[in-house]
Length: 106
Length: 123
Image 1 (tube, rainbow over the protein chains, first blue to last red):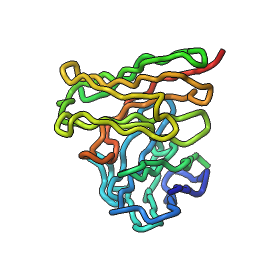
Image 2 (image 1 turned 90 degrees about the vertical axis):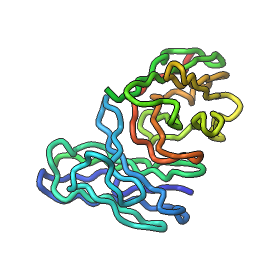
Image 3 (image 1 turned 30 degrees about the vertical axis):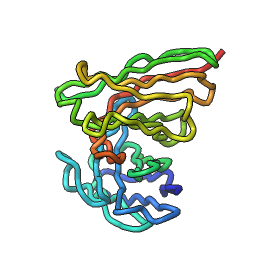
């Protein structure tokens, strides 16, 4: 399986909506799909698992959707602290990650 | 504080060995599977291995790219996971992360990461 994230870079302003895509080359079993946020010099942070379940303490402006081969992470209104790189992750047997989407300030 | 902290990275020559440590605190380490992930400059993360909890015998899985060269172990009494890296190659240069794995026998999502330790393989 290959995970392809798009776009590579998303240039948006605070308050705007961000829509990030993660497409798998084959079906992702049981929606074993997670999303992480990563800022330079920090530990990656789990946002979503099971494609749609927010991790503990994650604000509700973050939401995950999708199944099968197409998954989406949506940030409803960007806050200044949301500008970062986001990765999708297919877990289970033979885990792998996407190459990331950078959300930058326009 | 609940955390994982990687250590042991540095500059190493090709063909040599290095052992990374993942020191945990704030949770019952023995109850959890643990994963290792690396990220080379400008690339996405790469899963490289996994060790099951004592409940599943502490058995391991490693990615094909490092199988036979890298090995994962754990010391439940000290709350530490290890990544032993042998026969290092220049392409092993990356930041190496340890993460608590929410999986049970099969690798799951990674709910607690460290900040990583940089390994540079160069002559």
